[in-house]
Image 1 (cartoon, rainbow, N blue to C red):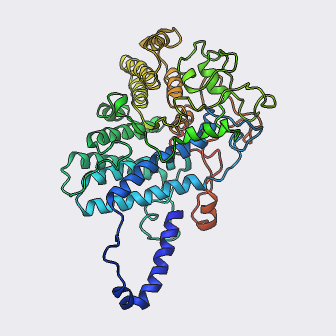
Image 2: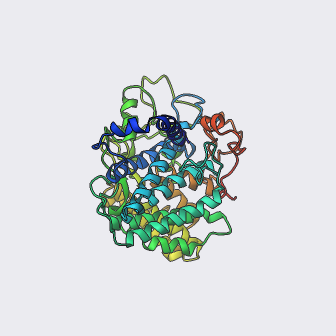
Image 3: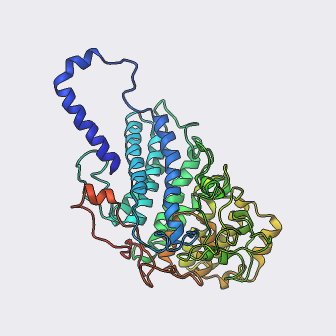
Length: 471
């Protein structure tokens, strides 16, 4: 919305100037000036900043999934106070606007592979937005049809996501007739179109699987998408090059400099240190450091703040050496591990317990391999009776629990939490919860929308579910 308004103002001002100065401007045209952004520039911007948007969303949703907790008592995000999400909303619409331009330019130049990337990233950004806001401006928001765009129905937009991904897959299978082909300016797949096709299929599986609680859910459609998606960790969609450092790495650097943030919640620590499930997860030392005794891992209770006065480390937080939070850590967008857990859930719901169990084990193993867990520790964990339960012992609870660990810091995990009705073992609402005994179910719309487009903003509160959240 912010980008749309800004562009609209520029166009309005330009129209006033041009109406009286056509001849003057003609003689002062610069023949060397670019008249439109190059596709390579748009590709670099949208691939990089779509990854940053995943971080932006995760920076808030990780408190709702209780990966993170504030070191300060009763922090707004911890206790479900209404927060302003202007930055998140603006990040989405900046991307949707640029991706719309990129798609149009690509189609004009018959560079169908660029068009396919634009559609894939549009689906990603739009999907993240719907999953936290519900109804959103889209059909009237990108091409200046209205300064006050109406909100499209979220269910209709979900079908648009699937349509975009199907069109993207067709584009990736078509011959690129334009002179421009994606290359090094692609921060995600470095111009590898087969990799982009697999990502489109992975996203299609993700969004179709979100419908698990609705009457339109089709587990076989999910599995069909999975079959053409990722085959290994090498296929992951991720950002590995940054302008400075991985943004989670910046959180860790800030924390080391006493700008406190990135503290880990008691919930995720207890899920991994043996407290909740009776088995120590070897990924935990690769995510955070133990306390000074070298063996203890303790998280912060959401809403209660840190223990003590901070002079002695008594709780765990993101560190500059952790897999997710070092300077050069990858920023994960869509992963093979996620795809395997999607497969496990869909196969389980389809009644194929053997396939579900095999995918469940592979999802765990893939994530451990990604983080660098040793083969011995990985296999020991998989063989533990709490994990290696056999096909007949597999439950949705186990699939969601292991996916919760594998999706650490990712906004997709909040979708799972709501679809699962926050049913993780021993998972509780935060202390001082503003919503009483209720879990939070959505973002409120940003302040900018209430100020600029008030007549169209839907009436919601933080317990208004997204359409797929049927429990």
